[in-house]
Structures are given as structure tokens and as C-alpha cells.
Image 1: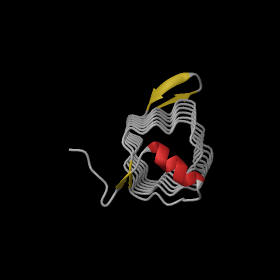
Image 2: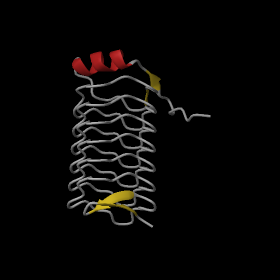
Image 3: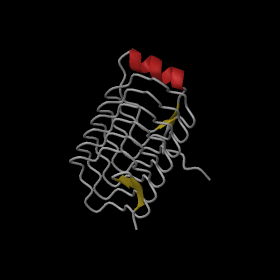
Image 4: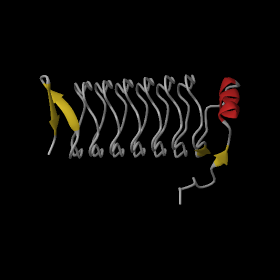
Length: 167
């Protein structure tokens, strides 16, 4: 059974975008499974503890957004701008983050199991305690990223021009 957010407000993607355009920023515990928010412009939005599994957030602009504790299982975040976003304890299991900008994002204790982070920008990101088991990190930029306590078991990366699977 899928976890429903406590007190989560069922809202449509269109409604959320209209309310954001009207100045609202707090969408805590929003219930938006499978929502199409492709190319959405939501900088600084608070979507903490929301339920967004399978959502399409590709090419969206979520800089400095609060996505702490949000369920983004299987979400499409391809080419999304998440610079400085709070993704603490977010569930990004099997999420598609190809070419996503996660510069200086906080991914402390996030679940990135089997996430595709190919060519993602993780410069200066906080990945302390993150679960990156079997994540695809090929060509990801991890300069100055904090991987203290992160689980990289089975993660895929490149060393020179060779594919490497971490033990």
C-alpha cells in the first residue's frame, strides 16, 4: 500500500501552479502522485513531506525549494534545477536525475537507491548519510560534495574512461 501523507491536501498540478503564481509558497504535504509539473517555475516553494511518486518535474526550476521528507520515488527530474534545494530525508529511489543541477543541495540521509544521476551537477552538495546503493553516477560532478557516511554499494561511476562498479 502506498504511503499517503498525513493531512496531505489533494491538489492538482494546475491548482498548485495557479496558487504559486498568486503568491502562495507553502504546499507542505501536498498529495500529487504522478503530477505533470514539467518545466514548472517553483523557486523557493515548500513541498516538504509531499507525496510526488512518479511525478514529472523534468526541466523544472526548484532552486532553494524545500523538499525535505518528500516522496519522489520514480520521479522524473531530468535537467531540473535544484540548486540549494533541501532534499533532506527525501525518497528519490529510482528517480531520474540525469543532468539535474543539484549544486549545493542538501541531500542528507536521502534515499537515492538506483537513482540515475548521470551527468548531474552535485558540486558542493551535502550527501552525508545518503543511500546511493546502485545509483548511476557516471559523469556526475561530485567536486566538493560531502559523502561522509554515504552508502555507495554497487554505485556505478567512471574512472578515466572505464566503467567502475563500487563494491
